[in-house]
Length: 212
Image (cartoon, rainbow, N blue to C red; front, top):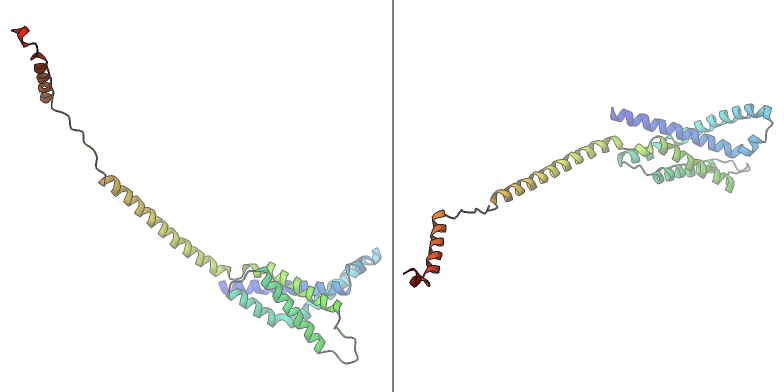
């Protein structure tokens, strides 16, 4: 079940990243300023065309990037990498590979893709795709296994802490038991009377002639 859940999460992240990449690519061709410059009665038609082109571009992006995305996703899941920077870099690298493949497949004499605007479009598309994948799947990479490990560690720490507390309580109890309790022995009453009598005897000796 965990494997199927991970596979579904990765597939959803890949689909969302492909759609984001397709939409970003189309928006670099038909910029939002160009879309908003259309007459009001043509906005719905323009939006429909933009959406269809985005789906077509997303399909091309998915076909090209599926292998590379699986590599990045596998590394992230195996090593539990949930860092946003990792997936942003992964998306940018895949976009650069797409840019290189597109340039390598050009026919001599045709317009080239080797220009700053196209490069910026590819880099931005990879950045957005990596962010979309991180939102859907990357930030949860390897979390199912980590939960079990964290639960086991927490249980072990709790056992150690309870053992330590039990030991401390035992020590405190032993200290209380071993602590000598001072016992006040009552002085015998006959000794007190003898002391009084001896005191009286001593006091009467200087005046004994008077008594005689």
